Image (tube, helix red, strand yellow):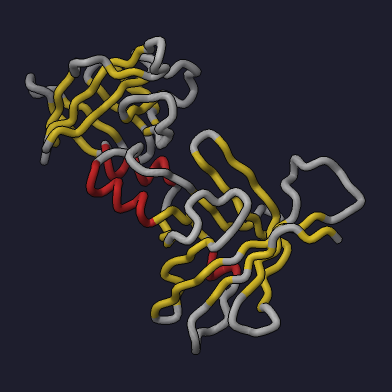
Length: 247
């Protein structure tokens, strides 16, 4: 066996054993979540998403996602180290790895914070793909893109003429003249503004995608194009100004 990375999870004194079920869910860096709240922007901090879940066959897996990059690996075991104060999470090769006679494993060290018998946060001390090392990760209840949309654009808005523009929690935009699926991007590369796009359309350009910026309580929408230096570029002036509607 070729040992790669094993992930001991450090727990506080007098805590019960941590299981994979305790760690299941979607984990996102706390600094990113705080930045989302204070800046009203999905691209002002580094987003990262780790999901611990089971397959339809009951196999535990760890999925890592960072913008347009991602990987998935089976979780082979979670066990205490010899000292008993930490855990070792052993991961196998991703499904796409070349077939080999050797079993390659990887391990990560994770600090676990519990409160009232439940895991409150985790901190990845190491891990070959983890970007936000030694940073608190918080659990969220839905995929990051949906969480971001709920924080930034989900709701009912009206323009200056009283026309309604609705962004639903399940990813549908209902505008006066059209209805289309949308997703808010969390990828800051190659763009100068936040934007949402239609996932089934390849081009990140208007009319299949639009930029947006919050200015106080006003949501400004921009047409997207490209320049020589910026592949996803917001026009200088918004084409639509919206305010939240309470009705």
